[in-house]
Length: 117
Image (cartoon, rainbow, N blue to C red; front, top):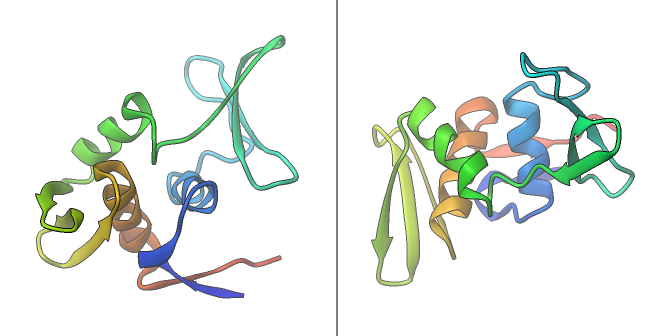
């Protein structure tokens, strides 16, 4: 099913950001493992008994570095937040992180995303 990138909301937005960042089923340099649960939430597992949701669209510790990494700018508009990268990609959102993560997904996949399930 195709969805417009500009309207993605969490947890689907977080799913597509994780997919764009290629972090599924991967162990990072710190030993952290990323998985997807049956509802499509991305889970980070820093240890055998610890787990947290990967939510770059609501957690600045996760989304902030992606804004820097991909050169995304964010501004407060009259009806929410607007993010863009070099005027090539732009998206709006209720929060700065939602707008920015929509742009991150657009960079990777364009105006629409389609799940391969």
